[in-house]
Length: 463
Ligand code: UD1
Ligand code: MG
Image (cartoon, rainbow, N blue to C red; front, side, top):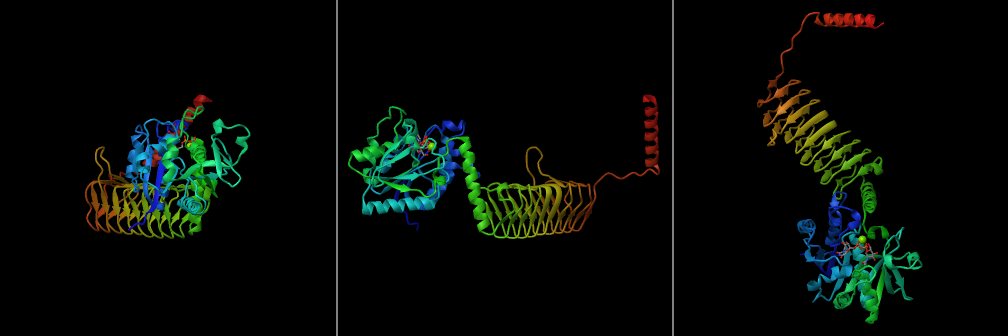
């Protein structure tokens, strides 16, 4: 049984995200093939809170649909008017009412957050409670660029005494490097009275969650500070440039982790991973390779340059590319070979099978040791339906063959080059289906002579 911590986690994701300038809600913009919100939910899932509540706008059903499909399956609370982060947390009132433990507040636009950091913040809050009780703990950070982050004002004992939003800050306050990461932990026993006391900020015309600091002090409580070691993972993403920045951070994180686990990346900066890429030790990845979602590669596999993979499992010892495209549903057996300009889709390619040049193999099964000649294609789609091609073991498919599905080719069969195969081929058969060759003796010589004669007449006329 999973042991859950007595923590209520609240994730805010109801904001309009206007700075993205997009019809897609901000938290559904992807990083490494996974929406920002998915990254946050994955991190939260690992800390095993008692309950997680996601605050959403009713106007973004796509976000709700996404969240419901996630394995964490958080409770949903609606914020009907996007009137600020303070109001957004108050929308979880029914969950806060009888809750007396720590309340962790996170933003859906902070996708780089790691579960280890959440754990450390929770531990610090717990030690605050036992030594010097606080009504809340703010997670502060010193980013390389303080941009529009709220600035933290500290008292003598490192207590937070105020958070000033950038748009309300004086030039002097804007020089403070310590910023509000947006993450905070409230003591559940005080949370509701603090949140209910937040008033609309006259300048921003919103209910600022950050106002809980001043309110708590007024009510005689202290507010603690946790200084995050790594500001990068707490940065909020509000625009397309920040999204690109976050993508670069994640790619760096994944490349470093892959190399630490024994993967060779010849030119790490040119290899792009997805959030779930799985590479075993002794995989070698050449420059300019893109891993879309759901790729798993076993040891001893070489992925040569300019290869694009998604939804593919490759077993040990195979060589892929350069310029290969492996699409979802592809399984490659041991010691197989997929060469340049070969596309595989929804295909099981058994061990030692080869397609070395210029082929499309879709909705197919290719048996052990079978060789697919250059330029072969499976004709799998009739404009309405997709059909399967089954090719047995140790089959030779001659170059430039068209395999019209549905089709079965038996073990050890040989298909002559240039054949259009429309009927099933029996085991061990030799199948040739191309128009008969016609040879005209000396016809080539006659052709050259006639062409050359015409050319010299033309030259004389123009000179
Ligand atoms: C907020 C903080 C700022 C902090 C920064 C860190 C406030 C007032 N400001 O600013 O101090 O430095 O984050 O990234 O808290 N949201 C709602 N409902 C709303 C408004 C926002 O759910 O009505 C959600 C958004 O979806 C987002 C999060 O709250 O996930 C933060 O909102 P955002 O507008 O990005 O706040 P910032 O301006 O970045
Ligand atoms: Mg933000």
